[in-house]
Amino acid sequence: MSLGPFDMTGGPFLILYGVLFVATIIAGFVIPRAMRPDGRPGRVTDEDQIAWLAGGKARFGDALVARLLAARDLVMTGKDHFSVHGRGGGATAAEKSVLALYPPVRWRDIEQALKPYVEPIARKLAKAGLLVTDGEHANLRFYAVLPYLMLFVFGATKWVIGDLRDRPIGFLSVLLIATFVFGIIRFFTIDRRARSGLDALENAKLQAQRLKAAPTAPEMGLAVALFGTVVLVGSGFDDFHKLRNASSGDSGSGGDGDGGGCSGGCGGCS
Image (cartoon, rainbow, N blue to C red; front, side, top):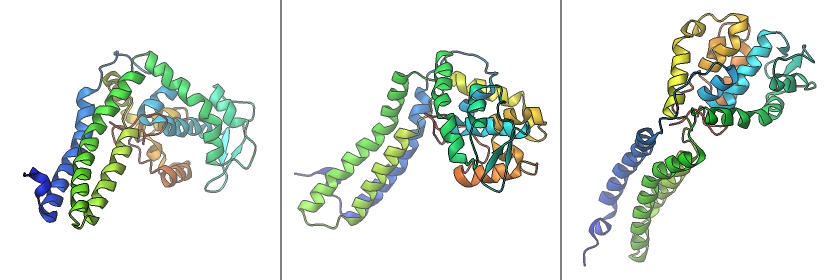
C-alpha cells in the first residue's frame, strides 16, 4: 500500500518539507493579521501608553528614562551607568520609583523598578479596546502556531517511517527541531494590539512626524515613545541610544515584527 509523500526518498522529501516550511512561516504571519480583532476606535495621548503600544515594556522604559534624562533628573555616567540628580522628583509613580534608586544605577535596576507598572498600562489599553482580550490573544496564538504543529506532525511521521526503514534521518531531524523552535518563537511573539490600537499608534506618529528629526527637551519622551531611541542619535543623549541599541537592538521601529520584540506581553509583533 502506498504511503503517498511518506514513500518519497530522502532528497525529494526534504525539498518538499523545505517548501512547506517556508509556507508555514508565511502562514504564521498572515493568519493572525487576517484574524486580528478590530477593537474599539480611540486616541492615545498618554506617553506611557503610546510607548507600550509602540514597543511594549522595553519602549515604555526607554521613553520614561528619556524624559528623566531630558529633565536632568537622571544623568548617564559612563556608557552604562546612571546617577540620580532629581531624587524626590518625577511626575509619575514609575518615574519616582526610578529616581528612588541608589547608585550605581544600571539598566537592569531600572527595569526592575519599572516592572510593577507595565501590566497596569496593558490593562488600561485593553479596557480601552486597543488591545485584544486574553481569549482573543490565545485564539490568535493557536491559529498562528497551528501550521507549525501540522508540519511537525507531517515531518515526524516521515521520521518514524524512515527510522523503521533504517534510512538516514539526520537532516530531517534538524528540520524538525527548526520547526519546533520557530513555532515556539511565533507563539510568544503574537502582537496583542487590536486593529484600533495599530490605527491609534499610526495616527499618533503622523501627528508627530517632526519629532523624528527635532524633538525639544520636553518632547523627548514622546519622541522616543513613538520612534525609539534612534531619535537621540547625534544629540546629547546619544550614549543612551547606544546603550539601548546594544542591549535590545532598538532601531526605532516599533510596529510589526518584538514591539515589541515582543516583550511585556507584547506590542511589536504581528
